[in-house]
Image (tube, rainbow over all chains, first blue to last red; front, side, top):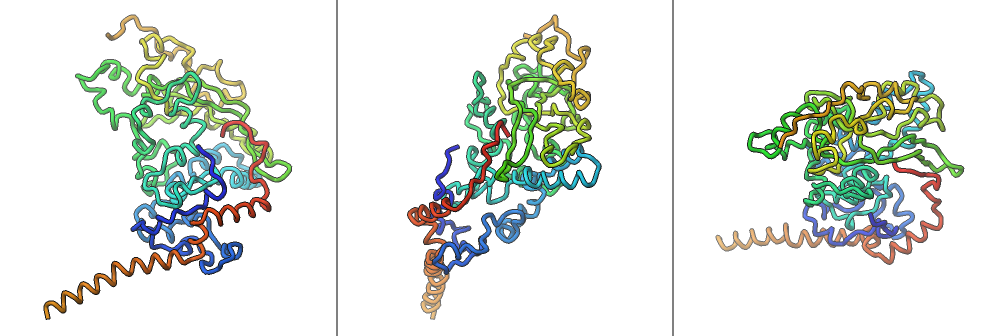
Length: 374
Length: 66
């Protein structure tokens, strides 16, 4: 993503007056400040940079009432799953929890979106800046909005930026994020989801690939055999990014920072930790997430004393899908191939307990096949 | 009478839609916000002035992928 010069971030395209929907709303009606004051320093007193966060009712709600109604529960705004997951790992001690809450407010709460931070500017977490002179963008541009935040995993996977790996086949078909992740999904439907994978109108591969289980479909036997046993990603994803040991803190100047110990490309099939009617597969791809027992040590020790209640290898849906992958060239490229599965030897001792439910025991690894479909 | 009505309607239409919009645009463009934020020159001057007094926002200690 091209960085913007400071003045570019706030330059307004005068064409905005021609916007039949937003062009008649004066700046100060949403942002406040004094529109008659020629001194910019005093004119900006009381100006609200993003009038759509945390509440978009005044700025957007009058016209976009349906979207606004669900806005607070959109995961991009509420960040509810993050909070719940940290909460589950957190100590039950009230003093520690309060300190953890402060640390999360300092480091985690900034990573949200808003109406404005998708449709008008780049997200604040990547230093903002108008997308196109404050002209309203019905569809947020992929690389300035979506992958501006979802960069180290989704962007690199989807665009094929990892050395030796190909971009997603969907990228090669010129598909952008909104092709699968619709506005309805992004805006939320008013339900308080505990996990992004619970979102009812989230994308499913079979939404488009409806034909794969039909008799006349190519590879129908393979698809039928693996239905509900392995997720699509198990066969069609390439290696993907994993991170570990993220620590947050403040430097001598009081500026916040984070440090991750390592990131590496890997491909691991494990047992599905989120088995449900929607995701009934036994085997799924797992990604190591950056959380660590000591992530918040700078602020409070033992904040995550219930660290082992959730796995650190989590259900993943890598965005680098290919029709042909090393693990699907033949049945036995995967069956009996222990290196593809997350086994006990692959997990650090200190994380074995947390990952006990996703580690694949040797006896569950599918056996080598003598028969192979043509 | 019929012509008068038609002329009247046309006048009302013009008042509501054509000049109204122009007036609104003019009012909009007359604000200090609009004048400054549509002028690259003025913004460069202001942002340079801000940069002189504004401390760094990012820590140099950040490392790794987020």
